[in-house]
Length: 102
Image 1 (cartoon, one colour):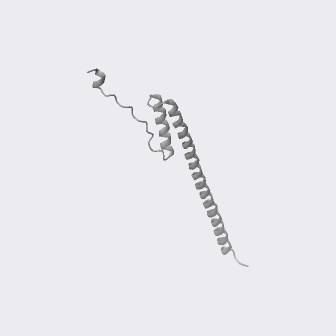
Image 2 (tube, rainbow, N blue to C red):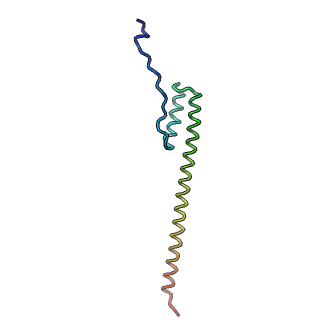
Image 3 (cartoon, helix red, strand yellow):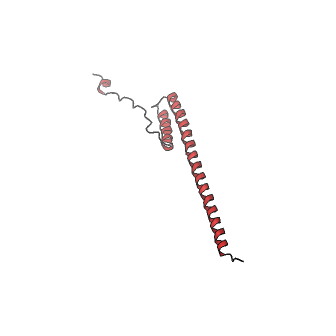
C-alpha cells in the first residue's frame, strides 16, 4: 500500500458566509470573503463577485439606516416644536390671567 492511500485527503471546506441580516453581519461577511481569497480557500473571481454583492447589500443597509435616523430626527424636531408652542401658550395664558384688569 502506498502512503497516499493510507491518508484520506481532507475535502476542502465549503465557503459559507453565515447570516447577512444586518450591517455588522454583512461587514463580517466581507472580511471573511477577503480572508478566504487571501488563503486560497476561495477563487478570487468568485470572491470578487461575492464582495461586489456584499458591497451593494452594505450600501442598501446603510441607506435604510440613514432613512430611519432621518425619520426619527423629524419626529423629535416635531415634538420639540410642539412642546415649545405649548409652553409659549401656557406662558401667555398665565401672563394674561395675572394681568390686572382695568
